[in-house]
Amino acid sequence: LWRLRYKTADKYHWRVWSQSIQFLTLSRLMGEHKRIRIETDRVSYPVGAQVRVYASVFDESYDPVTQASYDVYVKPVDDASNDQALRVTLRPNPSNPGQYEGYFSPDKVTRYSLKPPSEDESYANSIEFQVAEINTEVAHPESQLDRLDNIAALSGGERLSMTQINELLSLVDKDPEIVTVEGSRSIWDHWLVMLSIIGLVGVEWMMRRKRNLA
Image 1: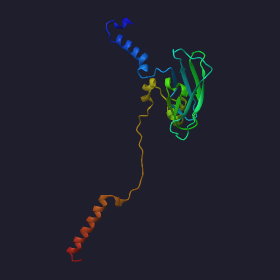
Image 2 (image 1 turned 60 degrees about the vertical axis):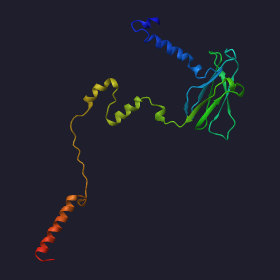
Image 3 (image 1 turned 90 degrees about the horizontal axis):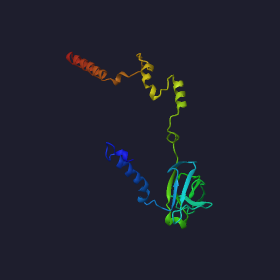
Image 4 (image 1 turned 30 degrees about the horizontal axis):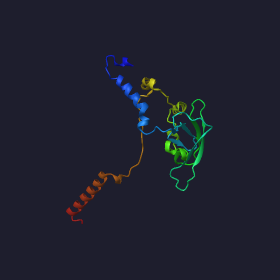
């Protein structure tokens, strides 16, 4: 990595090492150096989805703890009437000693807390995750090309990718199109009509006064 200094001094060399050290130590600086670390694969889930739970369990010497299972407890955060937490049993990951995994299926829309057993709370973290009604369009924002092709076929158009953007002008119909819109409008709504009526009435009144035909 010292070659990063070639003609650039410490512009890149210092950045690589400083960011590497920050990445490796940030969790400890933020107080996340717990012997038991509980995590979920996401922070927000749609209703009906499975929550995947992970736990990294180490002993006092920070050696992996190998046992048949590890239990965590989940409960709604906003439900003060329910003091009972649901136990979720995590199974060990054979490829990673000390790592445990399991699933939890939430049954309602709310915020949940995930905690270790009471005897492990002093050296374990606790987390929260949200279960919410998620709009299908927001849940799947990726392009659905088959639907775009169907829309183009039904509307008489054509779907173009970004690499075909130069073809857009050739597909646009440049001939002018005249559209005639017919409608009705009351003549009393126009100010010229009102002025005409006032003018005619005024002229008639002056003529009658002049001829003494009041």
